[in-house]
Length: 359
Image (cartoon, rainbow, N blue to C red; front, side):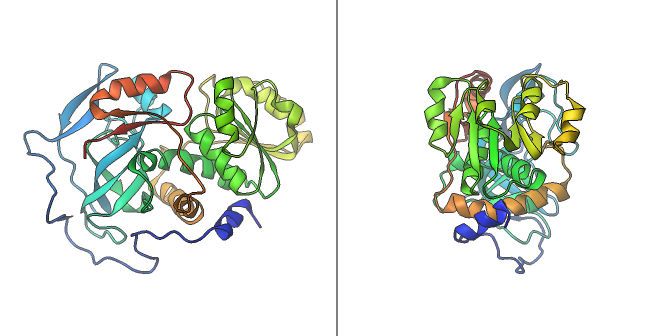
């Protein structure tokens, strides 16, 4: 049994307001909530964190209008991620179809309107999602196929920091690396949002999890998530590892290969410390090992929808049951979005930085 199947079997099914498989909402033109919905006047638009000269300002933007298959979501909370910071700095343009001047990869909020052919959600539903950009705004367009229902007991701040971290970690561990029950996993850079998600998912699936954390004061909190925690230079002493999840970058790759078990897998999903590495191909062949790398943001809709459905089946039940949590390092209002990005860029944080919208 795979670790992801095990996780599904261990905990109860999620109870949400998403429509069960096989049921549909009748197709209709764009539908708005009949009461309590005010998207702002045409002159004012909606407030959004807006990129101007590689800095962020809060400015009015035109109201988004949902197209076929899309939800219009009033944002309650949104996470800050490395891709957002890179976009502001000019190093990571938004993919086609996403706002070029409004960052933000993940959000949680309430559906206020739906486009044609929407089947799974309606006005008033609580949803969260990964998007190509634009999440740091009061209103955001989300394709219903990438949306996840927010469990009833999950707070907005945790929901706003859940989609990117847990989708990225789950995809890397189980889709890319096929992490299995009893295997040995090491997560580098485990104090961040994706790292804390990966530690919890690995532990929940029955893997033996080791986490590397540079700052000693953060290690006890990461250990409490289900890992043996060591410094970055100490992990090889507790190997070898079947799966290495690399969130730091090139400087770790030689040591990763040296600490890899026969048939091991390395998945690179972060390279903040450097994108270049020298690899011993002879060692890679002798170990019959595999190195993969992945990003989530630029994937086509079909791939993002597939990742969302896997999370829906295998991860949301754990969140709903209280078996997972989203550690939050700091919370900021939209008017403080510049401070939020500065906090994200600074070292010494555990988990997510969250931007909160006014209720």
